[in-house]
Image 1 (spheres, rainbow, N blue to C red):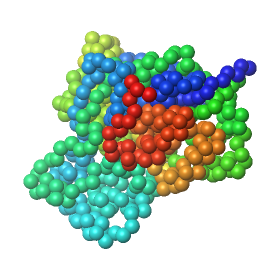
Image 2: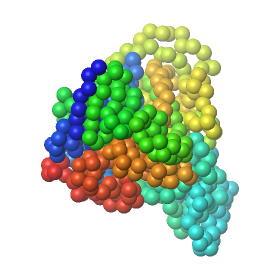
Image 3: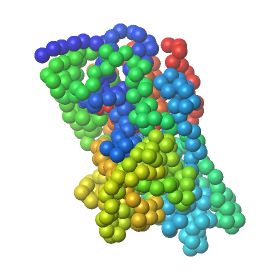
Image 4: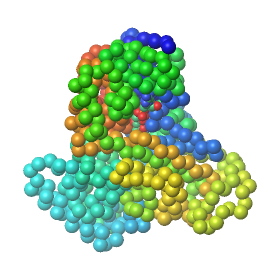
Amino acid sequence: MSTTSVDTLVIGAGPTGLGAAKRLNQLNQGTWALIDSSEEAGGLASTDVTQEGFLFDVGGHVIFSHYTYFDDVIHEALPKDSDWYEHQRVSYVRSKNVWVPYPYQNNISVLPVEDQVKAIEGMIDAAEVRIRAKDAPKDFDEWILRQMGEGIANLFMRPYNFKVWAVPTTHMQCKWLGERVAAPSLKVVVSNTINKKVAGGWGPNATFKFPAEGGTGGIWKAVAKTLPKEKLIFKKRVEKVDAAGHSVKLNDGSSIKYKNLITTMGADYLIDNLDGADPADVKQLKEAKEDLVYSSTHVIGIGIRGELPPRIGDKCWLYFPEDDCPFYRATIFSNYSPNNCPQADAKLPTLQYADVSKGKPTDNSPKSGPYWSLMMEVSESHLKPVDAQKILAETVQGCVNTQLMQPTDEIVSLYHRKFTPGYPTPSLKRDAALAKILPVLSDKYNIFSRGRFGSWKYEVGNQDHSFMLGVEAVDRALYGSPELTLDSPDYVNGRRNTERRLTKA
Ligand SMILES: Cc1cc2nc3c(=O)[nH]c(=O)nc-3n(C[C@H](O)[C@H](O)[C@H](O)COP(=O)(O)OP(=O)(O)OC[C@H]3O[C@@H](n4cnc5c(N)ncnc54)[C@H](O)[C@@H]3O)c2cc1C
């Protein structure tokens, strides 16, 4: 079987691998290749299309960039204004059968009075605890209690986060939080509640843009097109990494030798398939790997006939902490781009009504639209099992329960796919585990394990971060440059990172 050789080999054509490839191409230092087991670029930032023509991302994907270099690359790939739709973030939490504007804690004025009292009492207690506290909170649960108190913890934060992460908040650390969770002001909460006011948007993604064509996956296919085609190898899986021999073995029996390896495979898969490393290192890597925790993500998509109902309006994404539905988040995916749905003149038969107890549709003939669509995410772990046979039906019923759909809505397309892994959990032992894994691989074996599951840090696991993890890994491998995104998440998340540009090396 053939053996080829490159200076730098990149495994994975998701955002991280494409970031590495883009940088290698720009720097033009030595030979390189990128390999992916899939048919095309995108990884977890891909988009599927149902046979009826509805597009669904791997859950709600919104680009928010901290990096000028990332913006340069995205602009190069999709340069025209018409390549994008610009949106205002319109986001709510479904709580006690009403839509509470996000952020929840600033908008409790819309809740029943007894819940307002619980929330405010909890916030007063939390303020007292904060004054007395000498140490940092020991876990995410304690952080929630200190920031928001027992009331909001029980109404929203604990149940919602269990639905997202599929582990209790006591199993999670709190260092990852940074800018992601809005710290509430007691003054604003009390004033809004008394004045029956709702507070506006918060956070870095108050506005966002979404590709006009091809969903989120369209972005990454366009980025891949800016790279030399002959260096991108698809439909080949890396089965073994020989750490001492500096080579990888593929599923077709061939091998590729490298000087530097940038891998975006799961760090756990890499360790399980690593040959040739020092036995003491193997022992340390295998032990540490056991402390890396992940959850799976089920994505359920629903295509619906009819005009977008006014009750949905311009909502973008919605959070669901309660147990009247299995999903933690729903995205009104047809609101992101009209091309996420078939055009109104496409004729599709009705598969079922939203409420199946209404019976089967009697008329199965294809009829025209218009259409709109919903995309839901459900997490799964050994602590939160999901019945894969039932989850689609339970999700549809959950949409009726939460008034996303009316019982007689005509469903014309159904989509369900499970992604394992989906979320890298910021577990209590994660940082200690990563400290035993990543430096050993890079410093002793020139293996740079990076990306959402390569370096397992959720706080730098979005598309912009992932892309830059790849870019920075190349600079580290070639020049020994520091990797700020990997090593200083709070720093890169708290600023605009302008150091690198696509036009200058
Ligand atoms: C539910 C969900 C919601 C998200 N929401 C957002 C969001 O709102 N905003 C945002 O910016 N980001 C979001 N993300 C994150 C975004 O998808 C990730 O940043 C990104 O996909 C991670 O890129 P990556 O390249 O590190 O890994 P991946 O996308 O997982 O890519 C890894 C690639 O490696 C390939 N590979 C793996 N093993 C092998 C092997 N053995 N041989 C060959 N190839 C292999 C895979 O095929 C894949 O293409 C979300 C992710 C999920 C799952």
